[in-house]
Length: 125
Image (tube, rainbow, N blue to C red; front, side, top):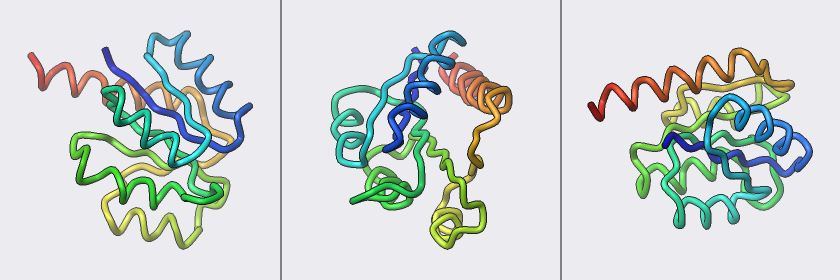
């Protein structure tokens, strides 16, 4: 199964993404903080970490920093309403490949996740 962890302190945003992605056939988990996300990552195999950048206590870039060594195969995608944010620049300099602006283009997100899923399937066959 291909699983996605959505991390956003705006629970209604996270729940909306979960509803859409479940309808598209993805297994999803949701966290409202970086600490909660780390706990879910410890308990479940996750393929994609889809995280908001600006969150209380731990921002999305810091969450990426805390996961990249323990979960090297984890793909991290940042979501932000602030495309030119300094945190985004730091994340990209440290290895983040994809940044989505909010509101998220759902069709593009589904295409992106489907591509990651196909790549994973091709690598395992």
